[in-house]
Image 1 (tube, rainbow, N blue to C red):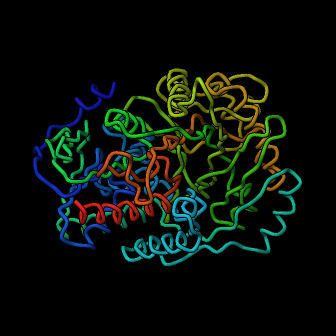
Image 2: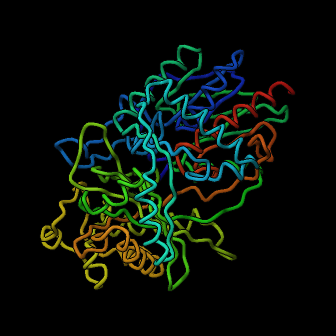
Length: 479
């Protein structure tokens, strides 16, 4: 499937050359690593990504067409800026939201310095100056309600760039990198990474061969499977952590207002009574839009976007169940992909949509039933169906129970008319073994970002890019 996908890409000018560093993936991790290396100077850097520049990334679903044309590659998933930066463009100003940066660096204050540093760079390149402060009075009242249902709300300072604002910021970063001499290669897919007996790397791409003294792999969630395959082939030590599998929930804007007034993008963590599983809200988009993701292997998923200018009447958010697997099925990445493949087949290549009323009663939704809802779906290129046929029973039970608990904080979330889209799966469960500089067990090979399981959001992904770049500079100085 991937080979067929790559063969459909346009044939462009071929690249070949020698570099000090090749960075695979230009999401937040790759971009910030490139910015850090460019700032240091004296290092020849190539930054490659399978997608296009941010200014060229426009999804047909967000036009009057409202129909997926299966762009190759999917502009939502791939391209300069990554999938996360062009979703809601929200920067969480805490090291323990969007990842566990404080654990990675071993110190909260150092992790907080990194987050502030990342934020300052976003602002430098045009991110809006406003920071959303948590409303502590509202949070106090909501926290009392949350305690009754074994839930907690995390207070977070947040900077919101929006999908449209993010595009401008990423374009400014790209222009800066090009002006600083970084070779930014878009529409360029990394196919294979090899390490020679001399310790030098060869990166084979769809547009030529690049040689490098050090390589940073930061392909994001869309490249997580490819990353694992390369690490295994190169002999790097790798493990798998928990996987987040769930749905995207869409409700009228006023329903989530009690939470979004307290925290712009509220992070609610709760534990279910039946299975004691962790369920959480993620990537809340007030007045936002649900979007479709198409991965390079043909599987689909859903995500959400928020714009600074364009607004809907709805709010959507991811509702995710965290699962850890044990022997003999420890590969949580493959587990998530198997669910995505089934959901893709059931939806005929489109995400599934279902009313909560129908999900609870075990009946598939139809367009007629969807139209009876008081909510108009912001994603129209979907298939009404039965999500319980795609997601494991345990996850469905967790989602239904979790929404009822969340209803205590935001009445109406568990309304029969609430719309559920599936699947939403976060592919950041691969966990390569790394040192303090984010170098793998293969000398000169570094990893960063969501695809490597080191982050779960823009803020920490960018911070891992900075850490990896600093580690690369140390490595180059010694070799």
